[in-house]
Image 1 (cartoon, rainbow, N blue to C red):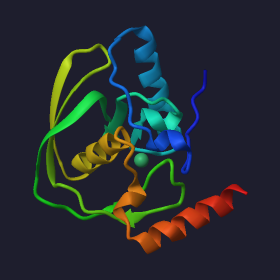
Image 2 (cartoon, protein in one colour):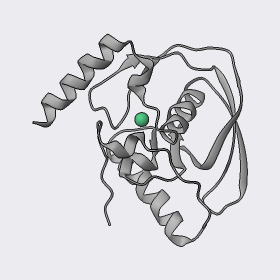
Image 3 (cartoon, rainbow, N blue to C red):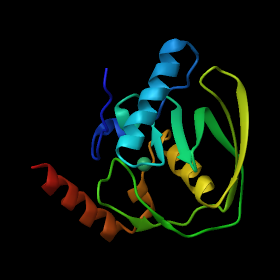
Image 4 (cartoon, helix red, strand yellow):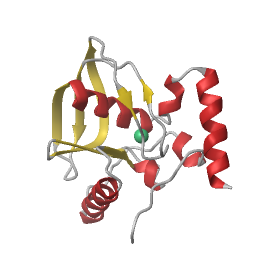
Length: 160
Ligand SMILES: [Zn+2]
């Protein structure tokens, strides 16, 4: 099955996700397929709700390193960084978003093994963005109400 990117305002993007409890070969296949869809769209991160699956799974690829984040939690966040951010579920939309400069993430990989990642800069930003997806929080939630409304109208217009 070929996965497809779900775009805003699809309700699955707002739904809180369920933890992963079964680590089998279909999970590994799913993670690989998410990675392919993400790379096809020139993304650096993708979360399961973005392909219509409401589970705590995300993938981040930075500098050819792939991080598989299953059931991730941010356990520490420090500092602040600004930077432009986009999202595969908001084609053509970019905005300046403040994020923590440094984060520590605890999660499992696709085999269920515990992992802990410390990240700075762009990788830290990508981790925060994808983990927010798993809570139903989106790029536009960081924007002002006016910008948010403009984007909503633009995306609805593109769809019709
Ligand atoms: Zn996104």
